[in-house]
Amino acid sequence: MLPRFEHLKRIHLVGICGTAMASLAGMLHARGFTVTGSDQSIYPPMSVFLEGLGIPLLRGFSATNLDAEPDMVVIGNAISRGNPELEAVLNRRLNYTSMPEVLKELFIRGKRPIVVAGTHGKTTTTSLLAWILEVAGLQPGFLIGGIAENFGSSFKLGQGEIFVIEGDEYDTAFFDKGPKFLHYLPETVIFNNCEFDHADIYPDFESVKTSFRRLINIIPSNGKLIAGWDDRVVRELSQKAFCPIRSFGLCEEAQWRAEQIETFETVTHFTLWNDRTSLGVIQIPLAGNFNVKNVLAAIVYAQDIGIDMETIRSALRNFKNVKRRLEVRGMVNNITLFDDFAHHPTAIQETLTAVSARFPKRRIWAIFEPRSATSRRNIFQEAFSVSFDAADRVVIASAYASEKLEPSTRLDVGRLVADLNKRGVHATEGACADEIIRHVTPQLESGDLIVVMSNGGFDGIHEKFLNTLQSM
Image (tube, helix red, strand yellow):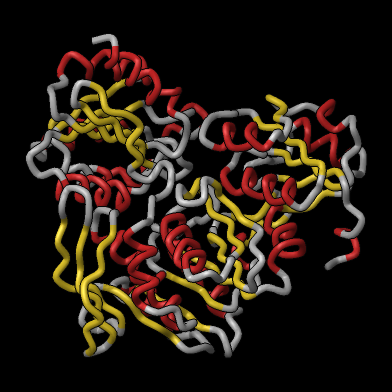
């Protein structure tokens, strides 16, 4: 442990309601530190999670939030110069660091870390793997970018030697622009897929690929890389690994494969193959081929460390998913409301395709808020226009805080709606949550499925929608 992490008692987190920051706050609290935090936007599920732990949440950023003189201030990567609380940290010469550095020194060093990386599926794969290890009695530690429903938490300190962590390629802090996952000392890396994302920090796809090259380059030769072989970029980057590679996917070239995938209303079945050996049928409660790949990645690691297939099967059958990943928020008058974190064109397409496969005879409403740094920009203008084909009705909300972007870089929601309609997808635009609810509610029919997709709070649309449906 670095000297500056010794003798800490009071730790304050600036930007505490981010999923990873909230998880870190919980871990620090569990280790006996006095933890406080502040954030501008405080909303579920992380706000509820933190309040349940008794961690004080200060709404808004202010120099006065630091008057109690914490021993260490953890600066979230969403915090930039000009933030009044950050300016006070610098002006008062307070001890500060990043979330990944705290994780590395206080929770990861000395463990056997497995870093789950890739553009999509990190949270679900991390949750799956943590649950399999738990069922196997290995008492893993973990940190997940969401609430894993089997644990009712996004973290666990764990008494075992394995620590599973979701490895984000986003930057570390205002003073460290390298990816978070480079701090996590990986023994093993799961690398499922690789696409362009995070347009606010990566100028092009090549720079995204470079970040994953750097991750692969720090895997020790006695570690391993578990690689999603359906993704050509993953294949390309994996060739530079200095460690053994385990491949998985749906393609014939993958060592570990899923075949004969069957989708039912509550479960998905597939046959598992390792090279030419069939390991029988696997049953999971998750929908979609993308989740089959997530499961494959977890199985590969579990088998590699000697967990038997019956234990793996049992864990998978009883997996309860992650909050905000096709989470059912409520059912009223036979109308089901889902909450999903999808914000990338591929994630939207895969999510809606999965819902359509699971409920082929029911009408799907897709309601999307372009909120992430990339989805608010016009980088995916064309890609979004082909992402909603599996939906019967589509409503696109106004891009979040688009006024903060240069006009030439903004997603053109009106054009997107027009392009969708040209493709035969019934689409409309809605300025805000309240307007969308007023527009959609009169058109709803028994049996409809509403899939709300946003990586933020979306102005409380889920609770508002359920309240409106209950008053119908």
